[in-house]
Amino acid sequence: MKQNTPDYMDLAVRDSVPREQVYSMCREEAERGNLLAQFNLASMYSKGFGVIRNHQTAFKWYRLSAKQGHTAAQLALGIKYFHGEGTKKDLVLSYTWLRIAENNGQAGASKIQGTVSRMMTQSQINKARDLAEAADENGYLDV
Image (cartoon, rainbow, N blue to C red; front, side):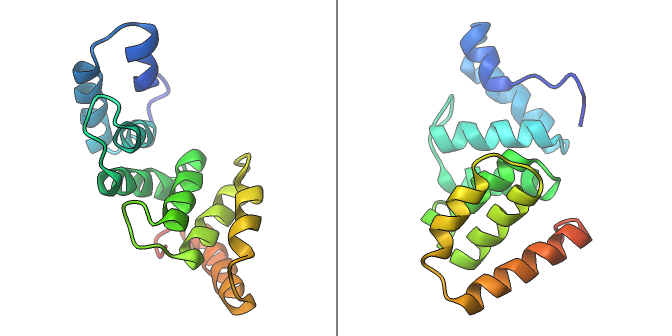
């Protein structure tokens, strides 16, 4: 990730850059693999910021960013799986990504993980923990 990557949504709000221009800049960087740009692009799609809201596209970009280690994207991905936004609802994968986010120090992940766990069987929780542990070891390739 480039160290000088801007917060794209902040450019539009704080610096009055037109949203279409911000989207174009962000999309270009996201397609190059920039994890912060991927997260910002996902957020744009999730919120309908400068683009038509599209939860499936948001999910795609959150996932790409999360797999590169962006902790806020990992949290967002866990929430998307929990609500079934842009993907099929999956409590095991929700818990898995929330646990990954928690393990990586993302604030708030533990509390949401607790909410999700109350809807799961112990077997599902064990599976999610195993997936999170394996993901931490292999760079999130299998999640």
